[in-house]
Image 1: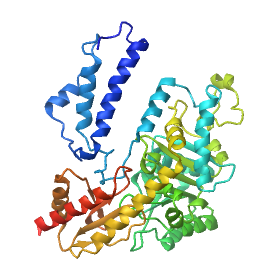
Image 2: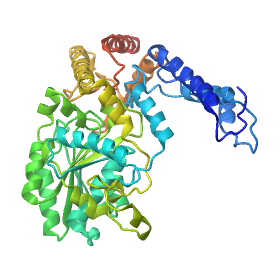
Image 3: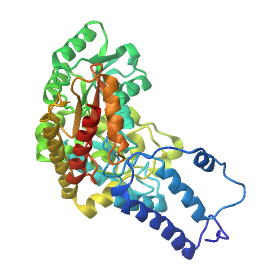
Image 4: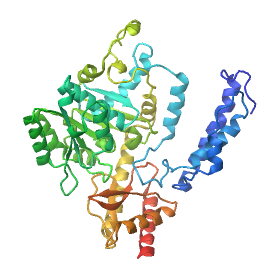
Length: 467
């Protein structure tokens, strides 16, 4: 393909040609996902040199050669979009979200304030309202789209700190579970909570937050003149997918007047299913909930969300007037997202949710989540019924922790390496109570019964080889 005469302003024919090349590359990628290696993530010296070249002053390569290099770099990766990826909670990357991203980048509208692009802000707000409604939040609630669960947790904790301890951040305390996501403690430190004011709530034997210990920590802090600002419960821990007792935490937070935040980055959208609603009982009582559409709505990485019971608490935490914004005025009933979060400049994230949800319908996502719950039950029953394996915890959602019976940690990791060497699946390990366990995380919308049966065969074969 020739280099355009006006490289920054290609004409219609050049746009069609370039787009066709990119689309063909993606089609080839999607067609090969089922058989793609799970973790061919070795970066050769030659490839490292290729991708590390600085950009030239004058063009030296055409689009084809640059796309080929991009394709080689992409291949040296974990295949997070395929059915094999069972190591961590995946970002599925449905193709219709790719189309939405292409459109959003092409239209390139500013949505930090409603006035410059009210149509797109209204579109995004409709999806955010849908999220609030899932959890039966009141009319005054508000959602936000973020870059991921870490930023959503940061915004939630900053809002809670401002609500309960504005001007007295040095006295604020935050409560996280023993198995909480690391982003919560990081968020607390980022907003000025001292390390020694971040309380770790111990777990019960089933890995849930211990309510009695939580109460004792809060009461002791209040007696010491500190300000309990936020309790962070988990709707699906990373280690095992365990759900904290959300109803009990909600009741305690209400009694003691502490902000109740739920980190539902992994598990929150299971609220769309009947089983999920039963297991997530109490989540609708939260003051804020972190969600990750790039996990359990299968969207591309970089799509997080937060829903907050009161939009006013967000505005109080983040509104900052600026004289140079005076011409933009009010949003005519639409939200100005810059008054609800730290971001002024932001990408337009709404289309990557709105287009797939409207095109496929919510039931398509609900069916996928239900299938993952079914597959998890199938795998759990198979592993727990095999006396070679220890499977201590019944999965609340779609993560299973297991290990070889009678083997030390080194043997567990050798077992994991044998499983992953198949390149047909990719699992991960973790430590719980100082002991190594293997993890199966079943959430990709491309993972179906055939791959889980194959996984169980690979696990069984690896166990036989090690015994």
